[in-house]
Amino acid sequence: MRLLATAEAAPAPQLRDRKEIPDRFKWNLTHIFPDWPSWQAAYSELENKIGAYAALQGTLAKSPEQLLAAMKLSDEIGQLTYKVWYFASLKYDEDQRDNQINAKRQQVQILFAKASQASAWFNPELLKIPLPNVQAWMAGNADLAMYRFAIEDLYRQQEHVLDDKGERLLSLASRFNSNPNDAFSALSTADIKHPTVRLSAGDVTLTYGQYRAILATNRNQADRGLAFSEYHKVFAANGNTYAAMYNGVLQRDWFLAQARDYRSTLEAALHGNNIPPAVVENLIEATKAGTEPLRRYHRLRKRVLGLPTYHVYDATIPLIDFDRKYPYDHVLDWLQESVSPLGDAYQRELRDSLRGDYIDVYENPGKRSGAYSAPVYGVHPYMLLNYNDTLDAVFTLAHEMGHSMHTLLANAHQPFVYSAYTIFVAEVPSTLSEALFLDYMLERATDDRDRIVLLQHAIDGIVGTFFTQVLFADYELQAHRLVEEEHPVTADVLSDIYFNLLKAYHGDALDYDDLSRVTWARIPHFFSTPYYVYQYATCFASSAELMKHLRSSDERQRAAAVERYLTLLKSGGSDHPMPLLQRAGVDLGTPEPVRAVVDQFDRLVTKLEAALEHVR
Ligand SMILES: [Zn+2]
Image (cartoon, rainbow, N blue to C red; front, side):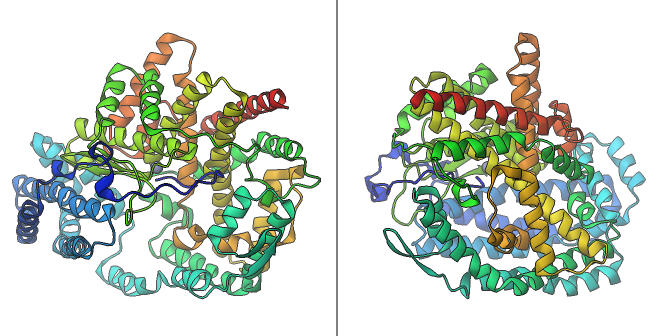
């Protein structure tokens, strides 16, 4: 997935009926199942296997063979699940108006719920066997030893599992867990009263989409400023309510962390992936020390846009007008050429997956919006796009291609149990794929306007996926520490944290508006998925560090870097993210990866400055 769309305004694409789109621009789902009856047969088989798995309860402790049988059956269920789920789900995304297919998709979801009940016995039963016994079994059984990392990780996580009574209490209390976010959603979407503002070209109702569109396309600063204030006044008017709901998020996180015996909410959030809290603290510190290029970029924008004052609402308007189209067929060639630094084998594999059948390119009525890569294990990755010839669509394709290549290589080189990769690593290949594509496009750009648009796209991408996400992570950490240290949580306190961060990042490069203080109240991630967005930043930093190695002027070092990078992709989820990345040459425990981003950003701003000199 991609976190943010860029500032470009997409033209309304020409909608064609799905039947009128040539086959070579549509994915071919018969690679999964030839037809619905075959799907139904696989569905029944899956149902049987789930029943058989439930029947294994009580057998694990008997012998290594019994444990192995359960692991293998679980793998079979998992593999079949990919095909049964994605066939229905991808079909549904072709045209979401189709109720029959939607019913089949929901049928799979119901089966998933059954499967999760039917397998709930496994972890507690395994964990009752002492780890040394299981380790002795694995030492004597090569087939079972393949599962070592997966099994030992369950024991590692057990450290914070409570006794039956404690777990029962937590599961009863879990019904309150989603309450703060449910209230946030209700207040900020269902119950919100969007204001209507009078802009220079007429009245506009300020939904979030409209607000963003104004910031990205409206060249009148007074219009942008008015939209900004009216939009934020709605949140300011409910500031105390938002603060009370957010306090609910913080209290819940601290309650759960303490109940499970973690020292902090951050430690609790990172334990699943075995990430040391120092990684996030280090990310924040190193980024704060590297904000000068960010300020330089905003000063440059202020100058180029000719604005007397420069505000947060001036930060996304394009520097120049530009309406170049990027036809899909050209982009396929460019994309293949852009990955040549990764070697012939990688390039060949990518070429094969671009050939059609794998990718659903154009929009049609009812098709799901956005873009994704779907890892259909045992078949191949499929990619959904809504390609509309804009630069943003081109980079989305490069991004999703990174995900698909990761899937292809991990599936080819790992047993099923380790074929899936975690989100902590997932956005490394996607952003690296975008970076390679940018390099390629910049090299062949002959026109300064082309260059400016490419550079602004890349720079805004780093602002959005890196600087903003680290600022958010910093806010979340400081807010959670309020409750950990027993300080009051009020709207004023939260607004102070946010405003001080905004100033710490932007210094004198921004003119500050009081209403920016309330920005925290409108960020859905803060309420829905605390301590999540930092992963975009660590992935981005990792990919910047890898790009630095891939660009080395020493040929041998470059070749070694390629080898390490491909090993990372081939490793899938066979280890925790930190050691996987360390083996690829990225140590997130040091400030180096963040410095790689800051240096890269600085270079891009310098290039942008030069290109802008030429066009004026
Ligand atoms: Zn992605």
